[in-house]
Amino acid sequence: MASPTNKSQRDNEIYSHEFFDEPNNQVRKFVKIVQKQGESLDINLKPRGVVEIIYNEVAAVPFGIETKINEYVVPAGKNFDTCCVTCSGDNISRFIVKIDGVNLKSQRTWYGNFNTEIKLSRFEFVAGAKLQVFVINRSDTLSDYETSITGNVFDAN
View 1: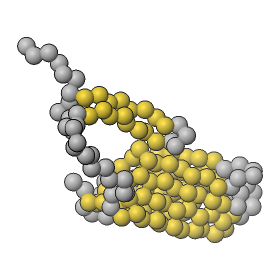
View 2 (view 1 turned 30 degrees about the vertical axis):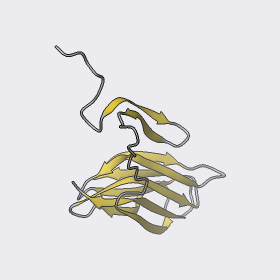
View 3 (view 1 turned 30 degrees about the horizontal axis):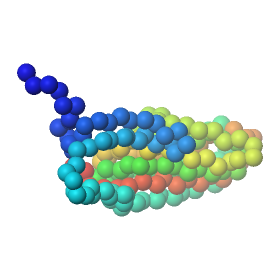
View 4 (view 1 turned 45 degrees about the vertical axis):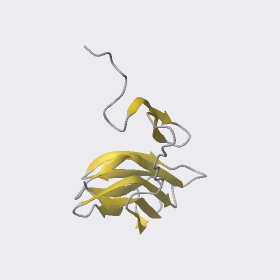
């Protein structure tokens, strides 16, 4: 029986671990690989696919009613990832991100800051997935809201 080499079958990996980078709200992976002397590594830091920004606004949202502000459906044959949703409004509110009608994440705004960003960087959405942003106005006056959904659209493998 051969002794273990600690070398994985993928990318000549010999050691790796994942960790959560709290300040950047990202999962990162540390990998040490086997590399021949003088061999260079091909590192591509460009976003894959095309960056999409889907903006929408809704006026006069009443108190307490969940109201859809924005929606994006991933096109056939494509995937969508590294997404973030920026939200803004005139009042204290709760913003909710749903995927195919199911709550995924929510965030609240409060006095002094009616803007928020909901990061979805650990999710990848497949063709046909419906990403929606809703708001619940927590103030007793009508309010205007706007959101942008930002992510990369790329060919599904």
